[in-house]
Image (cartoon, rainbow, N blue to C red; front, side):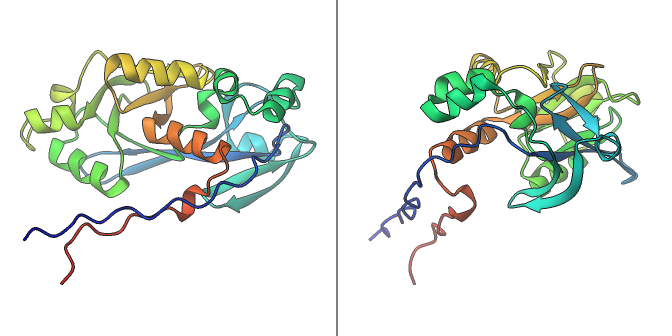
Length: 241
């Protein structure tokens, strides 16, 4: 007799939505570029709501509003004072808790994943596959020496090509990148239209600085609904002994 599938545990009871109209911290994001020789380049940036763009952490440290670098449940953050993004519209949206309107206002740069792993055109697909599995990423942006987007390697390309092929030869050249100041609704609509699970996030100078995924969007909405995203774990689907 086939074992009964296990049900996922119930989500924690949502708390009353926190009204945080004027956030005072910005997540630190890392762009990691890896080649076949395992040489790694790391660039750390934080999205500044005031400038509506990502800036190097060193720039944050030189800002008059900088307080210190701390840690939250997802990783390192820059704490600033006075509170950033003091915006009457955002305060109104937080109070009304209208997620649709809020997602129209929240920029992708505030929601994107903390770390994005980029590869060079000469990186072998076997290496790309390993990186995606290790980092739990949906895709790997392919960038040139200037950090500009050339294409994307996703599960579709990995399934269709051998591990010995180079990323530059297998990548999807119709690369969809989204500006970091674009609203979250734009990212969600673009992913749905392109049937993509993730999109590279592009800075104003064209550099890839992050990646926003469907999971990032779901986490954003989950937190706004009051759920503790860090406490949700699924049990193994293995049958009972």
